[in-house]
Length: 389
Image (cartoon, rainbow, N blue to C red):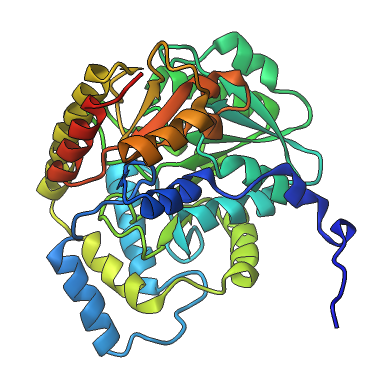
């Protein structure tokens, strides 16, 4: 027997967002046998030592539930790393939560913080998950566009705060534009958060991928911000294991307690053997991180040169591994049309810019990733040379 299915049976919250455009472009890339510069995952291997650690953990029978908020040895290593690199003191027993990727950490943080109708300040351009995160948690997003040079518009940011503001989402280095927020900018944000009793929720997943002498600063390390910041990061980007889905949140005890309650019923826990392997990752020596940034710097310049040669206008990113580019003049298509043209006719997949903007600015942009092998980027450059405008 067939049954009718009525729209009224669905939650209204899902009306506020669509399926991921980034993942959709990956599906189109596969369909057209294109080079996938849309989704930010490496097409080169993860470190051998890390893969061996994962295999050893599985064979060593680390295959049952760990403690729901994370294996003790991993939380201890995260605590040590947070102090050494982020300058944040965190008790591994009560202030560190291991999650299924930084994506779950962000969702758990939002659900733990937000009451229906409260507002969340979000810088624009933004990672596409933040809109759905707001919708699912019942938040009302207040978007604050960065200036054309990716600096903060102080007046716009200040006016976004009001008595309904509950949290601010900060992504540094930023996906998609590669912005690395400076200490002065972070101080401005911190002062506004303190004045309005707002929690900063930071996505710092690209914290080690920095260029041209830029330094990563965690806002939780600033005066008055440790107790009003949820610092989120993970292993996907730094160690080229995007499929492992191991992330974490660092926050003071009260905030952590709330996050753990949500996390416990959202996913129960992250994969136990991969948590064990990530302990090995956090013991990598300092040169690993310098080589990581150096490797991506070469890829950054290769893709930048290819895009500018093909007629795109773009800024060199300060961090992360994406370039947000203006569509060449004379194309006559918006971002969605041009992205589909590129993937089907040119054989290069990118993400339509409107995925990262609330306003109209994104309709003239595409995002490309350079988290690929050099030969992959060189082939993409060759294909882009044949771009017919």
